[in-house]
Amino acid sequence: MVKMLHLGLLALSAALCEATKLIIKPDNAKSFTDPKMPHLLNFTESQFSSALGTSYWTTTFLTASDKHQYLIVSHALLSYFGVEDPDITARYSILDITDPSRFWVYLGYVPTPESFAGPDNRLSIDYPSFGFKALTDDSVSKIQAWGERPDFGFNLTFEATTQVLVNNGGGTWNWGTGNTTEWALPSCRTTGTLTLDEKVLTIDPANSFTWYDRQFSHGAPLGNWTWFELNFPKSEIKASIWAIDSNEPSPGNWRFATVRTKTGLEILTIDFDSSKDKTWTSPDSNITYPLQWDLKFSNGDYLSISSMRPEQEMYGNRSATDIAYEGGVVAKGSFMGQKTGFGVVEIVQTI
Image 1 (tube, rainbow, N blue to C red):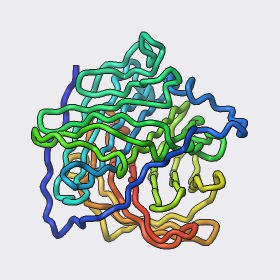
Image 2: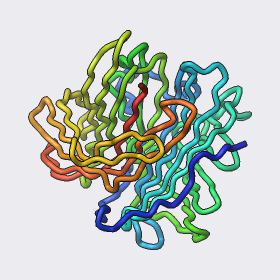
Image 3: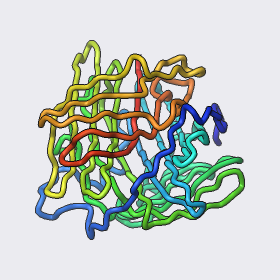
Image 4: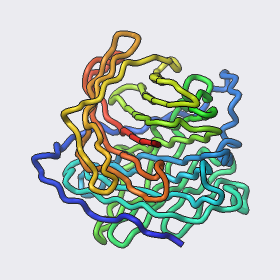
């Protein structure tokens, strides 16, 4: 069922990896939506949309029973662009934030189901070694995610105890050759376990959270994109930041941030620069990735963002979008009164 392409524990000199101590706290909202907001987007229905491209994506920052902090990235990606009968790309990784020389990664493929709805009409991407499965009838409020390999794995349950972040304010925006829709639950209460080299670790729910990101598209940029998830400790500020470069026939250089604050959403444009000096070249894809970025926001704020370790690529060989840098990052600067943050960067080159 699963065709393995890339699996391993990648060692890296401690001199190239900087350990980070994060403040990780889930939100405790009673509802993920505000009933006063007239959303056009039906969050339950959107869980089942396949469109031309569809993505179910989680990052879990967690504190485990061994007192280490970890980052788990899990992604189910389905794209019909240029493919008549695609499989789902199943990829996931675990980074030991406390000891970032330890990193596990896997990418494989599973057959595309006839429907993303299970027999109970709930979201279901259900395979023995990988999956996402809704545990409530709305397919949003409580979701299980898992991945299992011989030397590492995880089994998480996250609850929508966080206010939704709707990208670009309404959820839909230009995505190259067509529109895309994206929304997120950025700080969900999380329970479960992770397994590293046959050692089972328990997640501390008081010091862990999951960012669930849902996106489905009717087009794609013919170029590159960089996306950041940023979290700011001891605040309700969460940021989804896009830098997209799309070539003909749908040219555009889009730079914008959707920021969830205590009082609602703010949309900002950004200036975006990536380092030419601090880089890492993948031995698998031969892509050179920047490891540091400088962002200037239209409100005058600024951030410098750095990767937690160089090697954080997920590699597949079927299509360009199977290759992605999905890496933990830290941020510093001045952003809406915050000085430090942390999150994830995604870098994809489609041509």
